[in-house]
Image (cartoon, rainbow, N blue to C red; front, side, top):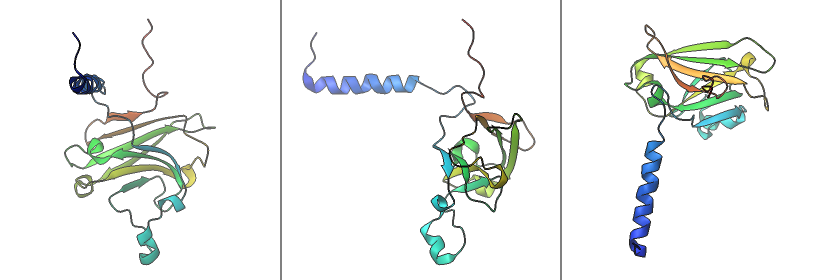
Length: 167
């Protein structure tokens, strides 16, 4: 059966959208991070700061290993993934950096007012933990959960994940 041209495009779109819907993320995990990489202090300055003098994060929430330092390696993730109900939560970053065989762990507690806002969460290795430009973490994992309960894995690098099954 040959379809006329006006019917081909909608059929093709329906097949493509159906295939995209089938490519889901495993339960308990979020999709890929929105942004990841090194940011200099100048990259994070917003125009309002030139007039007001203090840092203006806008809708972003910054969780930094050194709250006073801006430059560093950041992961940007949707706030709704970390705080699905807008409830307070503890955010955990576990990371392995070049030249250090030990895992490093960092934790931040975010209150319900901050959790319920819109905008991305930027999690950063800053200050003394900053690996520096051109030096990316080897492996990393971001988890979140209730301060009283277990944390769920939301994002992780390929090297931090479970090994593929032998087969």
